[in-house]
Image (cartoon, rainbow, N blue to C red):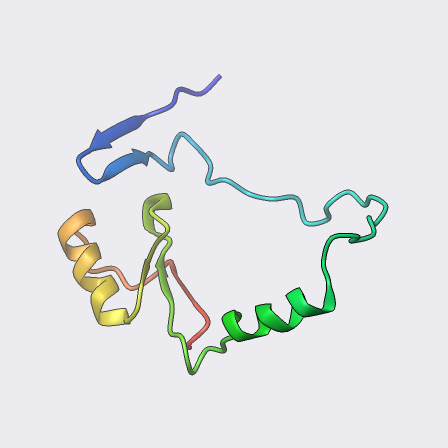
Amino acid sequence: MRGISVTVTSRGTWYDTMTVPPPSLPSVLPSQPALRDVDTSPELLEASKKRAKSTNPSDTPIFICGFKACMRLYPTKERLMQHRKRDHASEDESCIITWND
């Protein structure tokens, strides 16, 4: 059995990826019967359209630090690289999760 290396910092908990794999979801989720929505009225649906927004990559840039299972979100690649230099002492440009490139 492998050990778990955990470091607790003022910014949160960091798990060593060499000993703990990153969390994952199964590629196929188990199916289940659909339930009928008996509570939502047409008025509630119309009201929700005023609050809801959808987005696309050109409207909402997202850059996620996938380095050492950090998974922090940043609005620009430059901001992500500042985080990497400060928090990970690295200028490595790999392991960036984004829909903008």
